[in-house]
Length: 318
Image (cartoon, rainbow, N blue to C red):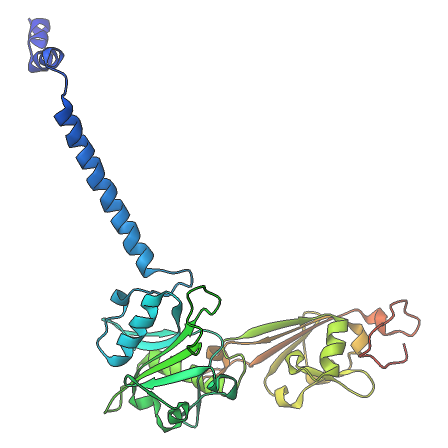
């Protein structure tokens, strides 16, 4: 009885009905085609939206990312829509918090609480305050506490559709009639501009020299090496950096006096590093601004050494 009931169940009747049913007509196939078309259109729309808001620099182009609620923002959004401009530096507030963008080179500086545009960028920059273009000299009249938002836009000049007539850096500043409270991000941004007035590499930089490169660097007084050559062809840390450098010789802690014992011919490799400003330009437990590491080959300094120096920057006797 149980076996008979299984064959008489609804499952068997449904299968028999499907076998005897008519094949799907053209209308059914059109229905499937419409569904596939709708799904494909949705996928393409999502992909298009993603491409509109991201570029290879990681900065958004879409004006949706930055609502044009002020003249400065409107001008920034217009540039981003062109596809050849990106936010090189920025200080602004989104729905939730203050946002900052930091990029090399730092073309704005703060000196004694006043904005400064270095000479290298004065003729490459245009300045807009509250939506109006003004001479770049007007920067010195601004104080950070009255700056609500700031954008430095930079153009990729090598792109085919780049505006050849526009200056490559466009600075947009939105001011406030009242002082703007400083949160941690605003402090960080303006501290960077202060550090930029003191350092060429406020975001940090590293350099490496072999012996011949060091000979050239010390000949031309390239301070990225942190050391100079004495009259007897030994090394000495520049006086400007003496109180702000951490030294290692052959991976062991060393002193300024130890550096003076190193003959320039002994240098196998010399490494220098300037730390990012957030590590040394702060009140609480700042680290030394510079790091100097020297690796030596002592046998090179001996007069009977087979390692000879062929360099126009070396005047020693061997």
